[in-house]
Amino acid sequence: MKLCRFNGNKLGLVQGSQVIDVSQVLAQLPMQSYPFPRHDLFIEALPALRPQIEALARSAGADLRHDVQSLQFDAPVPNAGKIVGAPINYKAHVAESKADAGIGHGRQITSIGDWGMFLKANTSLIGPSEQVRLRFADRRNDHELELGVIIGKPCHKVSAAQALSHVAGYSVALDMTVRGPEFACFRKSVDTYAVLGPYLVTADEIADPNALDMWLKVNGEIRQQSNTQNMVYDVAKLIEFTSAFYTLMPGDIIMTGTPEGVGPVKPGDLIEAHIAGVGDLSIRVAKEYA
Image 1 (cartoon, rainbow, N blue to C red):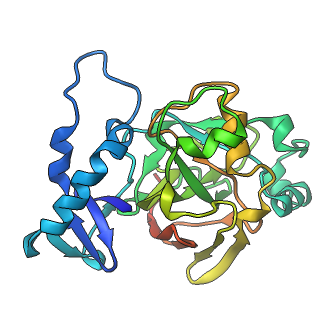
Image 2 (cartoon, rainbow, N blue to C red; image 1 turned 90 degrees about the vertical axis):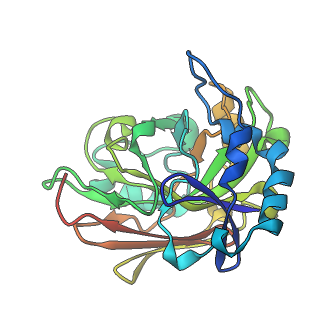
């Protein structure tokens, strides 16, 4: 199942070149009162809602069927409690980080096991219909293509063997980055610096998340090209590693690290990204600095 949010918080089921509006199913989500939950209610309820989504799609008339090319896509997970990043998690990116002072910025590049994970503020999250708004014109702002993993049910201290059973789905992600001396959680949490979409592809559609071709272009030029098999910690290991420290909740996003080829973008650039089986993302960098 391939899901999306489009045109101002409508829920869609993607079938080929069409998006079928199944927003009606959202009325099934439980009403909440203060204090509100810290996770995404739709992602939590998705297993139970799938039959209704499929039924709505089968009966949908022409007025609920839209051409993919005509829509504006929002981030498929609007209420991520946490966005978790995996630093230096591709072998060749470790090497380029050691070689490029503009990436490492004086830090000793060792291993993800030494560094641990980092958090991006959930206020940094946007979808492809928005624009990346760069800050700090005097500093380097880089693109980083990543496989996004969306957690489907709570997990704490989960084993690698059980980790993938906690995944709701996958999405194309960009971990936009300001280079500099600050901690990653500060530099990578700038508004609009976490891009997700356009789709959430449910876990059953991806036979092996650790064997997906991926690439990123800037203004049509290939910058990054790799496969998720080159991760140091694969998806299951990342979930095990992260959940050893804190509980992951439905709608939490793990950005699984970027391959080699990271580089700067400037105002007005067009970023295009692809992950096999997951989708194609296209987003514009705003013409003016924020």
